[in-house]
Image (cartoon, rainbow, N blue to C red; front, side, top):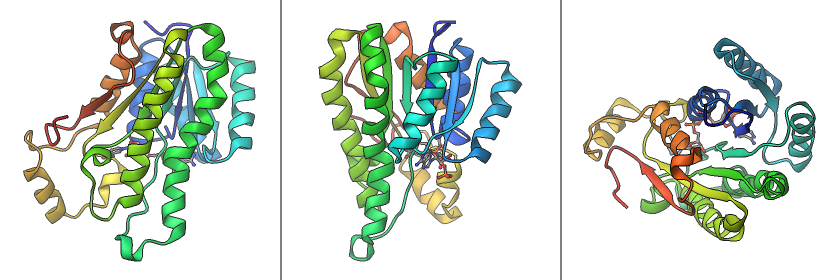
Length: 247
Ligand code: NAP
């Protein structure tokens, strides 16, 4: 129960990797605040928070909208106290080859995957600094390091997120706050359901473990990074990818 009496905010956590992280942090004793983009998704979070008997709730927070972030944080602070753990997990893809990529596809991905981490981290940081303790984990991707045809926007956003975290880690290390990234390989979620069987087969050939990861593989890594076992680790990117890329 390492996170007892700590509030953990996980963005984009109605399903997939975010949901697995929220459940893992709840098991570690945290008050789980699962945020997602609309009320229907926040309700889904409420359901699993209750099912597991955790403290906390689902809340609506559009991470691209500063007003929505402020409104959600006002409620969280008032009901539970300020988040001490922040997992910037919300992310989207809008894949296209560069020659066809529309400005909206570029901008949407940069806004949701990169600018949102700035928005939410800044909104949570003052309280962490005051408390002299905090944990921020940014959800990057293996493609931040190896690139991926059709994902210039997504890979740029995730590489930006890694560099953002390294800079922030340097700024706040002396305040007891660590900032790390996780770079998942391919994980079984709605985001990867779009792969055809043929694409899946080709992909598996590039993964030495010959399997696609599960959300729990990422949640376990987050659990480690926010635990006291990782208290001297900051500014790193932990690769969780079955061996497909070895940093
Ligand atoms: P997912 O199933 O698509 O879940 C992402 C969640 O974020 C969704 O609930 C989504 O809601 C939400 N979201 C999107 N825009 C948002 C916004 N503006 N404000 C708040 N929430 C928002 O994705 P996942 O596969 O679990 O991925 C989680 C994270 O891991 C992402 O950052 C992703 O880039 C990263 N990642 C995933 C993989 C993988 O293989 N799955 C690999 C590497 C990295 P909507 O459905 O409404 O958009």
